[in-house]
Length: 45
Image 1 (cartoon, rainbow, N blue to C red):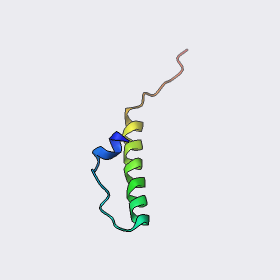
Image 2 (cartoon, one colour):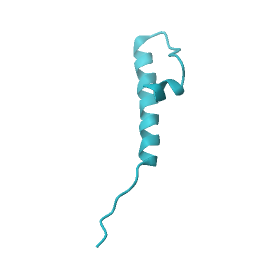
Image 3 (cartoon, one colour):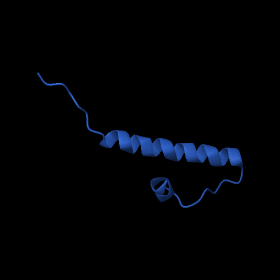
Image 4 (spheres, rainbow, N blue to C red):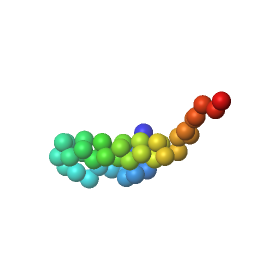
């Protein structure tokens, strides 16, 4: 949750559905960063 707050301290949208959409976008961005930093393991041999 701390990382989500780093992308923006508050939800500026007033409509609940837009707040949910904004939160989903933030989570997708964080998942993309996590995927880029994950090691790729390969079987050798």
